Image 1: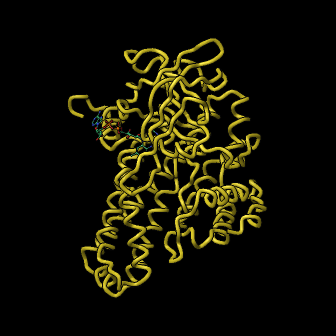
Image 2: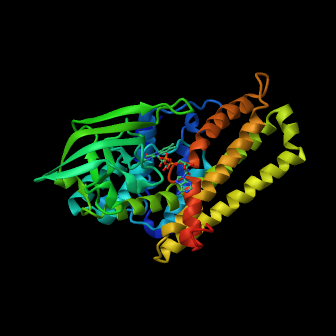
Image 3: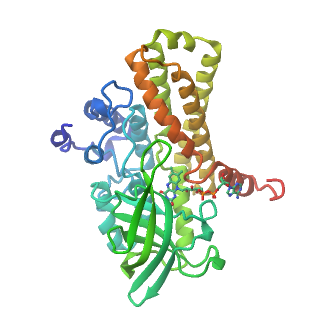
Length: 403
Ligand SMILES: Cc1cc2nc3c(=O)[nH]c(=O)nc-3n(C[C@H](O)[C@H](O)[C@H](O)COP(=O)(O)OP(=O)(O)OC[C@H]3O[C@@H](n4cnc5c(N)ncnc54)[C@H](O)[C@@H]3O)c2cc1C
């Protein structure tokens, strides 16, 4: 792609308002996103990590990443409203998902909230400049939904900590330079107490990454083993005993504000599906059947509801209120809604055969991949059952025996 040209883009003056900002995002993205990175194009091909990094760096330079981060840490010093405005435009194009979303959307906000000044200066600008990838080391073989059972131990030894244990399902571990690692300083019986978070360089001796192949034939997550891993005290994020609260904050961000573009992206996927069907004689006939018309209408309604949830999240946060457990509503809704859509899209495109139109054949590839990945959407960032528990007990305050 023409990286050198687009790397020189200048973001608009933040004072100009979010409508102008959205217009800038719209025009810049359309002008610069290469065709082969648009999932609905015939010449689409899976972009390499380097292509994704260059693309995201160019977006950042154009003012389309780090929107809400303070300028002193490389951000653009804007509000969540501009962040949302840009996300709507990101969702409108079927571009690759960020290869650094853990860094930009989870690690950045947590370091801003609890990191030392040194940690902020060291980590935050490097995330936006795409110099570091992060992974999130929370889940363990015996601690997923119930994170309080985690066993990875951190023991203080003078000015250092020694870490031993195992993480699993760690997305992006193979490419990550740093791990946001949740450890235990006490015993498992301490449950939520005695937990500590670290920023651990992944090249520290004693760390071993073993990739896991998933149903979509990718190795996007891994098991990560920590065997006598020694890190300095400066790798500690927050105070001992603060780890659980920090982890809860990370999960709340993950459920409420991470990838705000989702409903706009789902809408683009639906448009892709419908246009691909219309390009093909057999599929366009199916599309006119009342069964499929009703399914399309249902998906549109769900996307609209999801947009409402995202807009309300932004309003709540702009009013200075915490989202807290309400993030579970958004997580539950987007994952269930997208999984249902992906099943519908697969049902529709399973009618594609070698004599179907090229756009229909491209759509079949895209929606088979989307369907396979959608199976994970009701698991990661907290399973559907766990979200239902949170909603029943913490939002609706139902008694435990009824919930
Ligand atoms: C694609 C993908 C990427 C991931 N990336 C990461 C990552 O980067 N970092 C990381 O730390 N983790 C990651 N995870 C792990 C993810 O967070 C866990 O898989 C998830 O929290 C569920 O934990 P578990 O797999 O141990 O299942 P379990 O907790 O063992 O759950 C098994 C089943 O029991 C149900 N269940 C559990 N508790 C309850 C309850 N109280 N009430 C009702 N039902 C219950 C669950 O809903 C589920 O159906 C990823 C997972 C996936 C699929």
